Image (cartoon, rainbow, N blue to C red; front, top):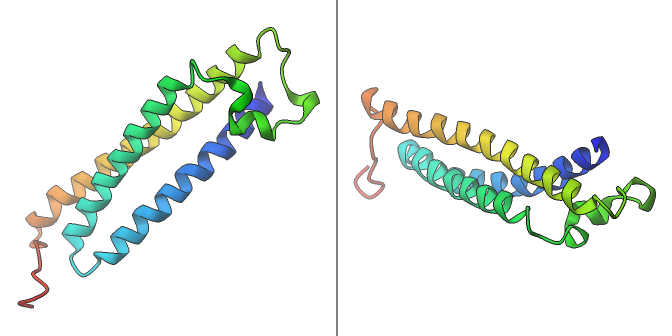
Length: 130
């Protein structure tokens, strides 16, 4: 089970990392307006959170042999076929939910920043009048 968890963490972590890179690029593209950047980041993190929750739900019924995690496991590392579906789906669901928790925390931080920034005078900057 430990090897399953390790591989699931690597595969899901890589996917979330690529999503994080995309979010960072959007935030960097809107860096001329810090409030807009934080709001865009918050929305996109919520989208990633929704996808992770959906994937966690679908992991329970997905065919374990067609998952990326299963493909990365060597033959001798795979669990016995009698409980492989249960083990793989449970590990995937738990890993998706762990990453979803982290995304939820990040979303809370970003939206808290978006609420606090106007209190400190950081508001929308119109690039055409500045």
